[in-house]
Image (tube, rainbow, N blue to C red; front, side):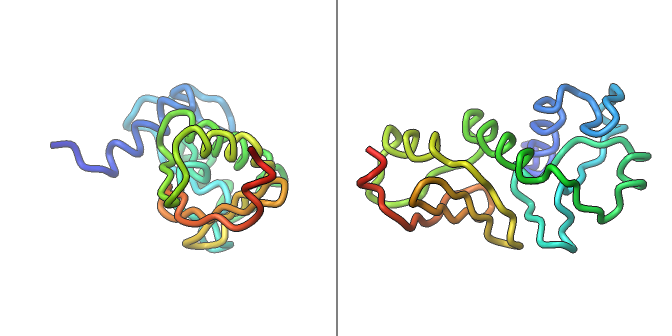
Length: 143
């Protein structure tokens, strides 16, 4: 049986094209490190949309700096993780089709420690450990 962490790292490695997210260097699996795009020390989560493949040199250089484009990158990686079925939906009373419509309207993602927030027009999703656990807002205006 493969451990969950190994699967997570492999997914991120393949998602990022087997390259360092920052410098583009091709990486062998053993050369890759995981980097928190928004550092944990600054509130970054362990969710897929905050983890990227990184070479050791870039990881050492970046340290705990926050990239200026974190909002754009988080949004892109969030939508990719949803498409790849790595972000799960656990909000009761909302089926897969409705959740697809809601997620298609998400325009920003913010890491806030254990809970990340995904926001769109009149709606906020709360995400913990890659699972949408709560939704606030007007879902009626979405459909």
